[in-house]
Structures are given as C-alpha cells and as structure tokens.
Length: 451
Image 1 (cartoon, rainbow, N blue to C red):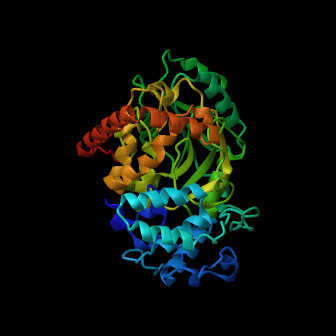
Image 2: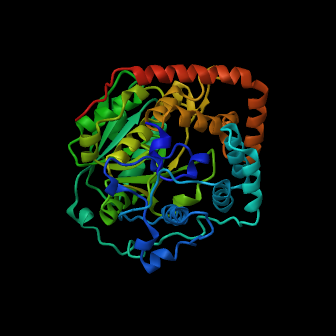
Image 3: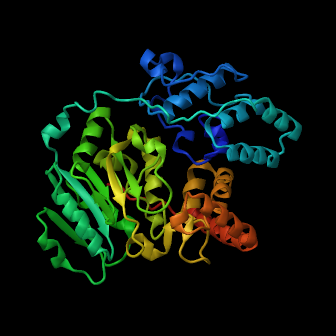
C-alpha cells in the first residue's frame, strides 16, 4: 500500500507519516474526516476557518483537521478531494507554523530539499509565512455535555465481560491489579488469565474474590496468549489489560458507557506511564482513536470475527496491537479514545515483554539488536509502503538513544542526537538488519488466525 496513493490529506505526512487517518477505510462512509459546511453552529465554534491558503480545498481540509484533532466525533459525508491537490510551499509552511513546534518547520524544509524541490521556492514559502502565528490545537475541544448524565442501557442490561490478562513472571504486580479488579463497580465480569510464568503458582489465584479462568501456557508468547484468551472467551465484550497496571473502580463501567454513548466498537482507554514521555494533551478528552493499546482496551468480539485475531508474526516483538488497530480501522469499526477509562502503566523493568529485550518499539535493551524492532518496519511497510516507513524511522531513530526515563525530555533529545551522530555508521547497520528481517516477515505465508 503506497501512501502517495492513499493519503487522506496532504500536510501531515511531513510530521506524522505513519497515522491511521492517512489510510482510507474500505467503506468511504466510515471516514473520520468531516466537512466544515456540514457542521452545526456549535461544532463550527471549534474551528478558526482559514481562507489564506492558495486553494479553497486546503482551507476546507484545515477546518476538517481542526475538528478531528479537537475531538469532534461525527461521521458525515466528506466531499473534500484528497488526491491530486496542487500544493505550493507557502501552503505547507503555513500549516506547519500554525500547528507544530518550530523544529518541524525546518524538518519539513529539509525533507523537501532531499526530495529535490526547488530550494528558492521553498525559501520563499518559508519567508512568506513568517508572520503566521502558532495555534494551540488543544486549547479547546468538543465537550459532550450530556455524557455525564447519560444512562447507559448497555450497563443496565449487565452483559458479561471477559477480561483477558496475559502474565509473565509478575505475580507481585498482578496481585495489585487483581485487587483493583475486586473493587470494580461493574461486577458482571470474568477473568481469563494466560499465565506463562516460571515457576507457575496456580495457588496464587485462590486468594481473590474473582471469577477467574487460568490458562497455563508454557511458552512465553504474548500474542498467542491474547489469541488464546479470545478463543476461550464466551462474551461479546473483551477487555484487554496488561499485568503491570493499576486501575480505578470505574474502569469497566466507563468502557461500557463509552461504547454505548458513541455507538462504538472499541473503547481505547488511556495509559498514564510512570516513566517516559509526558501525557499528551489530547488524552484528556474524547476523540477518534488513532491507536490501539492492548494494555487497556475494550473490544467487541465481532471485531475479531471480521478482522481475524492478532498477528502472531509479532511474537516477541512490538506493535501487534497497533497492526490490529489498523485492520479494525480499515474495516470501518469505530474506535473512541476514552479519557474516562485510564490505567496507570507501571512500566516494570522485569517480566512481560521486557524479558524479550525491548523497552518500546525503538529502544532495545541490547545495543546490538536491530533498530527499530523488525515488526515495526513490517507494520509500517505493510500498510503505508516502504518509502513512508523509511521517512518515519528517520524521524524516530535519532531520538531513540536516550534512557527510557528521559523519553520526551529535552535532555533526552540532546543526548540521543549526540549518540546518533557519533555512532551513525553502526546504527545504519542495525537499521539495515531490521529492514531485511521485516522483508522476510512481509514475504512469509499469511498465517493470520480467525475465529
């Protein structure tokens, strides 16, 4: 799949090449993009309509972008053309100055020079837009005022929810999570714990006042474990949690309420990490979900029935949940980022996927491991194409060499860039190795399992 043929709108590829919303769902009626003229008066109050682009189509796109980023969840017909739009440099730099930090202005300029755009035109475009003021996209957002008093008929009907928790050598953390689940205000749920620990302590589960089904899995395999939980489940509602999580008593009820209120298929709860980058500003309001994190997400079983299970090619690697999220999005399932259902992600250094050597998709515990994790390139190339995958990792790799606790901090950025510049020949070898392994994954026989 080639981004140049499938991108929804033209500017964001310079900042965020890998994004669900660059892709087109199989059914065009499932677009998350809305057209300004179809919005209500209240909805238009979210938007600062900008007529200073060179093309009316780009003004409409800018308005649609604001609506999307500020939490307007509305599926309406969208007649804005998304391909073959003529862009001049001033349009691109206008958008960059409005919505992004200044560094992205220069990153975009550099990208366009590499792609052999005329440097004189690019410089003129930069200068023409020098008076454009930056706008905080998240200073306001759409407020669903009736959500607080919404009486959920789904909750009243008390459907059974299966909570699927894979665990590996984390009994202490799991103990805290299960205590949190004992306190849930919504009580019609059963746990499915896929225990891969060595040694295995079956008696550990006897102390909890929970309906709990234990699946013993000898082989440490995260995506196989989650798939086993899905196959074993007998509920239409599946909540996925990581074992190194702490959750509030209303976690489950707020997930169900979100599904009901928005008539959604997926409620993506937010994860607040104890270490790492700061919490993004858009985590504090409802919006279209542009990621899927199996550390805290409620998914209707019908999504798996149509899309298949998790891709086990991601075993011992990263982003198997992101890949499933792309499939769900392309198949038209409605995914809502839900700030009301949050978890604290403890980011425990031992146990779980950390035992397989990765802090995240770009940070391995072993400096000699391929960068990024090969499954990341597999995902990017599978849906967005090789050219876009390379662009994304060139954004990400230089900033991935700081300790995880400095992720997202200026000190971490400076340290990481220094390491990248010093070791870039060695780093290129690691990137080439990852690219080759991702090619092998792309060329393998499709082994995706279905219910």
